[in-house]
Image 1 (spheres, helix red, strand yellow):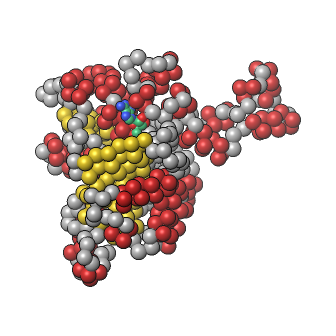
Image 2 (cartoon, rainbow, N blue to C red):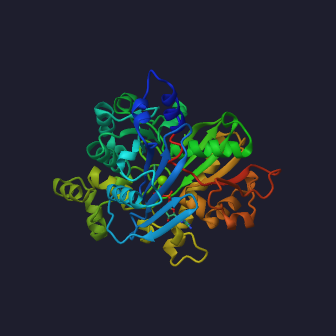
Image 3 (spheres, protein in one colour):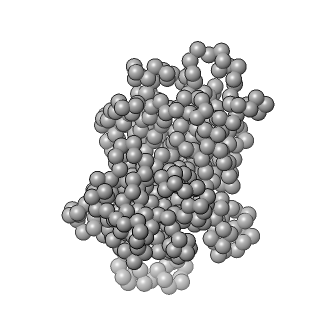
Length: 452
Ligand SMILES: Nc1ncnc2c1ncn2[C@@H]1O[C@H](COP(=O)(O)OP(=O)(O)O)[C@@H](O)[C@H]1O
Ligand SMILES: CC(=O)OP(=O)(O)O
Ligand SMILES: [Mg+2]
């Protein structure tokens, strides 16, 4: 799978199979740029890069807090930084994308990019890539193929494809290249990726573990390996990408051998609005009206008469309702009313529900760390925190590392409290590296790398 650098770089220097119109470039007065877009579940982040080998960062901007309005706009160009609350209503990732472009094109200092005419490629992060192991250029065929499994990542693929659709319609001269979160996990062994269900049905419908956040894991792997001065192919890590969507990955010799998300990003850890793992039968018992029924009538629902079955069916969730509830109405939001984990990860939680939400998250993450520690045979170079929560919450890191004392993990409290500086990609938080694996925090970047 190529990096953005190799994708652009190789094609730039291979005259036969060019994706760049070199003649056109030579004719132009201005260096064109690459725009990369990451439509997350609560944020849209864009970065502009120069179209050269390797690409250099020009500017980046993001809208965060789409699910917890008012959203925040952030812009950075070199040392120049700007942050403000957005007054306009930005309900969808498409609104956020258009707002970001408008704002960036208006920046007087951003003379390289004043309109879409200055953009040659748009690289899109797409969460679910199905069986694609490589980046693909968007054309009718690839676009329709991606559409066919859009609903397997309901919080992501639809939004990202809306932005792809928008780019195809409104920016037809700009080529769209899609990079997939799932591609990094194609190395997961068969017994790990296979669900114990009828294999004919599974194969016919592509029902298996895919795993996500792979663009991020790939960036983290390369950054951490470099930091540790080790070849990535010899690096073993347990990596947490914990933000609005949260997952964890076991990496052996530079390859994903397991991850907590599955067929869809709903599986595994809970998130801002996602339940994470539940007993699948819960869906049959989570009736909208159940709370309103008396114990007697609930009991009656289990008696197989035509009329009670009818009553039971009326209160059952449809597949779509279950999907909506588990993806959008669960997680922190359902437990506490907020999707913002910084209100939950506090020394004195405002309510018992906040404390419970924190403890649930710790419990689930701990379960995966134990699981992956065993799968990696205890031979790990480090445990890595990343994603909005992993990078910012010193309290969550401390709570988890303290509970992993038996694995030899220890935290330098001062380094943990300080956290990573702006621009510091990897920070070592280890108390004593002679006693066990490193504890690291990595400020991930799902825009620059675009590699799986
Ligand atoms: N100081 C903090 N402590 C705990 N959580 C934080 C903090 N700052 C931000 N977060 C959480 O990080 C999450 C966003 O993570 P991020 O990975 O950037 O988003 P996305 O999943 O949309 O890509 C939000 O749930 C936000 O509340
Ligand atoms: C896959 C996923 O959950 O992504 P995000 O964290 O951006 O929501
Ligand atoms: Mg994200």
